Amino acid sequence: MKFSRLAIAIMFFAFSLVGSESRADEMRNGYYAAEATGYDAEGWKDFITIYVSDNRIVNVEYNARNSCGFIRSWDLDYQRRLKAEIGMNTGEYVRTYTYELINRQDPAKVLVLTGAERPHKVFQLLAEAAIAQAKAGDKRMAFVDLSGIEVGNR
Image 1 (cartoon, helix red, strand yellow):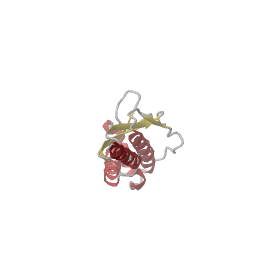
Image 2 (cartoon, helix red, strand yellow; image 1 turned 60 degrees about the vertical axis):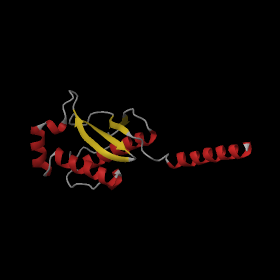
Image 3 (tube, rainbow, N blue to C red; image 1 turned 135 degrees about the vertical axis):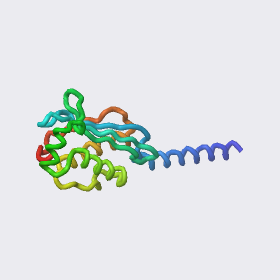
């Protein structure tokens, strides 16, 4: 009788180990964030926050702020200039990139919008960092060096 209880206990322990190994690549529930290590040439620091539930990204916020904490998408003059230069404003590419990440669940599969190639690369790097935090269950801010990315379009 004792042997069979011991055998059952060992089996349960072994199955729990197998289950935990298969979950090592899963994202943990909660909010995870990443931001640039510094401000770009125009004075903006990009950031992303994702919310994960049941191993899925269900909400994404991507934007940038200046040293005063002012959010880029709130700057109406900047948005008008950007629309004239590249044919879209921050809100348009942000909505597209965040929608794509929620639907595709993979930053590498987010489609690049013409005119917003730099924001796409920044978004991709920040999203990858936030996802890595989610897989590790690490709620601390991830910092990403974006200094090597050409300024080009916004």
